[in-house]
Structures are given as structure tokens and as C-alpha cells.
Image (cartoon, rainbow, N blue to C red; front, top):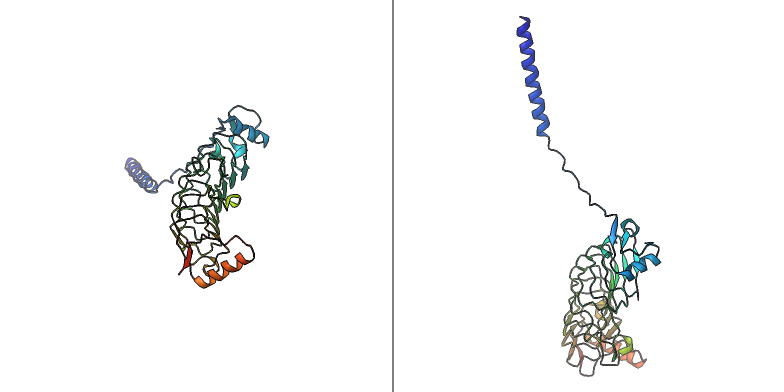
Length: 295
């Protein structure tokens, strides 16, 4: 009889174990969260780039690399006139908000697709013809303006040939003096306040510099208050619905010989405003003689 009890108990224990295993196996396992491994070093192949990091005490030895932990939390980096030709390594500056590489005149490319926290970016007077800022959705200001004039090639053989701003909805200030742009779409930038696409103040009364933009619709930019669009190839310009009920503080369109009309919200208000500014010697509301404001 004892043997029968032992066999029954063994069978019950076996059934219990199977049931317990089934219950355990029915609970889904939590997936492992894989964290991105941070490399100990980041390659900096450009000596001038690394020298600039050493000057800023972010590096110590000129050996074509920098400790990643030294740079990954940096929020501002100004590398103006540093003679840099290769910005490899900038991708490791994950927390960078403000980057300026002004007047690195032989710098031809810049990849900021991994610097997604950028709010301010300056590449003025560099030899960059295209740049992808579609991943930089926090950008508030871009300064891609260049020197222009008889002795400088910007706007002719140097400068941006295209720029896509459709993903940069937070942009407030866009400076694109003296490039080679033939088109510009800012319809996806509702916070835009300043737009400079001309030749710059020093060449306002010249026919040098500027861009080659023909069509510019600013009717989707209700905050736009400053427009510098001199020295282009404009044939169409619409400033209806811009700041101050369609009367931006500044609107300069000189040296656009094919621009016959500027579409405005209220012709009389614009005419009166432009006439008053002209009477006091203010040049910030000027156009060519053939251009008329129309509703």
C-alpha cells in the first residue's frame, strides 16, 4: 500500500511541475534594451580641427583622436578662421547647440545629421555647396552668408547651390547672402522673422552678389518682418500676410530687373510707408522703378 501512495505522490508532483513550467513559459520575456556603445575615442583626422580642440582644453595630444567623453556634452563650439578642411568627428558632439565654422574657406563638406540638438549653425565663407539640415529640427538660426564683390567668388563659383528648409519649422532667422541659390521654399517656416537672400549691406547699391532666385512666396510667413531680397532674378514676390498685417518693417528688392509686381495685403499702406521712409533717407524699403506694389 505504501508503494501505491508513493507512486501517486510522484505523479502529482510531476503534474504540478509541468503546470508550473507551463505557467512560467507563458509569461513573455522582456526584450533587452541595447544601449549604444560610446567609443572611448573619436577620430579627428584634421590637424587644425584637433589643434582647435586642444586650445579649448578638450584634448591634450595631437594624435588624430580625442576622448569622446571630453566632447559629447559640449553645447557651443566656435571654430572660426581655424583653417579646417575636414570636420570628421563633429558627429560625436551629441549635445551641440551652437556651431560656427565661419571662414574656413577650404571646408567643402559638413555633416551635421547627428547633431540633432543644434539651434544655431554658421557656415559663412566656407566652400560648401550643399548641406543636409533635415535632421536638425531644433534650428532657430542659420547663417550661411558669404562675402561678395569683384574679388571674391561667392555667389558665382562658390556658395550654396540648394537648401531644403522644409523640416526646419522652428527657424526664425535665415541669412543666405551671396550664394548660388535658384529656388527657396520657406512655406514650412511659420516662425520666420528675418530673411536675407541678397548681396548684403555693403553691396546694396551694387549689382554684385545676391542669389538667382526667381520665385518667392512669403504668404505663409506671418511673422516675417525683415526681407532683404536685393540682387536676385525675381519675377514673382508675394509678401501678403506677413508681419504687421502685411507691412514688414524692411523690404528691399533692388536690382531685380524682371520683377514688375510685389503682391501686398494693402497697397496704400505699403506705398505710404515706403514714401515716408524714402523722405527721411531710410533705405530699408526700396525697390526698382519698374516694380509696383499690387494687391
